[in-house]
Length: 134
Image (cartoon, rainbow, N blue to C red; front, top):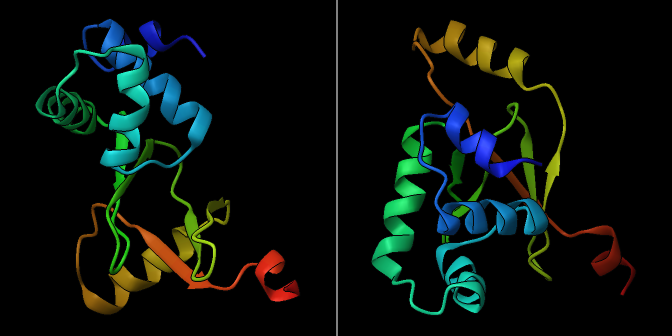
């Protein structure tokens, strides 16, 4: 993935730190700020937590990153993609994407509530197959 081009397409300057953040997000999928800070410090030892937050917020404002709010846990971030469901294992904390079309659910919710919905985030939690086998 060409991160410089992706940043420019979202009207953002392609700084080395932003490229590093996107690379980590692409590799890891979902990271909270602490996980991202630990990893990005390996590449950019002088980066501050404030700078990391500033970059995350800038990329979120431009629609490049999405925040996933997880009940009773820290928010995670991912590179924005088509709406989908997230699955969280309550035992091992595995956190994965489930590519289901949630458009019908969003449409039905808007119809029932008369809300003009702008965004959706669905996190389902349970026990993954590996943990069930233990």
